[in-house]
Image 1 (cartoon, rainbow, N blue to C red):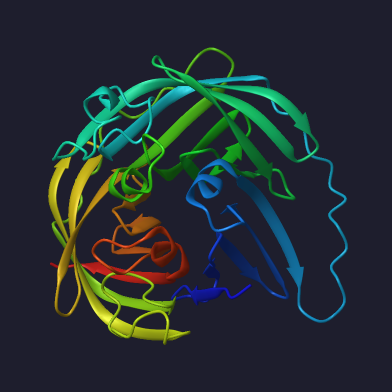
Image 2: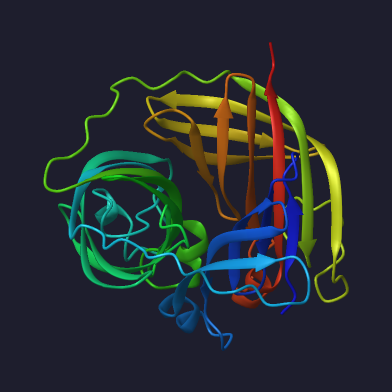
Length: 341
């Protein structure tokens, strides 16, 4: 399997992706650990949509296989209750209260929509680190799968529409991720997307969250390190088609502009050397992370007082790609941005 990867600016993380998989690994000494998700195997979009996995890997430098973790993972409480903050283009899934405006239609309604709603996670089964659970909203419920990290502090989750990495601390689950699709077609899969963050507490009483979100600086500038296979993103500086290009990389200047912020929900503009493209984003409840998404991109960035750093993945390259073109051209990238004073 041809995978590409990009290191974060501090060398402590590596974002990887391939035709079927995407994941984020932490580098510490002679060990690499991380989690991710995969989709499909046989090249058909229906299989891509309906076949998904969540995994967590552990590697050690050298040719000797790392011994499997012997750490005992705690049994998670059965019921978790909390809230979600979501920003979306289109219906994305029936959990979205505005899904009826888009699902079943050829094109999503223009403009973004936002929602802040209750959610419930009910664990159906846990076998060691392997988890199956129901994700419930006021509108519907569906089954998800989860994979716990070796230390039990993270859970990679995946479903028909979504994938993400959540943190587990005591009786709290929190994290950000993206989702796609609405009515089972490839056009909706790439054209409808959401960025959201969740906060859950064990039991039936939701966690108490801050009612105020930090106001982000309007403009950020910095660098992106970009590694791709094929097109690997619409704004790849190498314009050769994926059939003749196997591997490419570059380091370039980037600018991020906050066009609109409504509490935790944002519209952004990401500028390359020659072009610009829109993004949607959602802030975590503590304001320390932002998840972003558009037709091609999904990423989670960390926010500090003077930096916006993180890694993400992209797919496709053409304005109207086929499923194979979108799947077979992929990229990883890491940004390091500073606010413009």
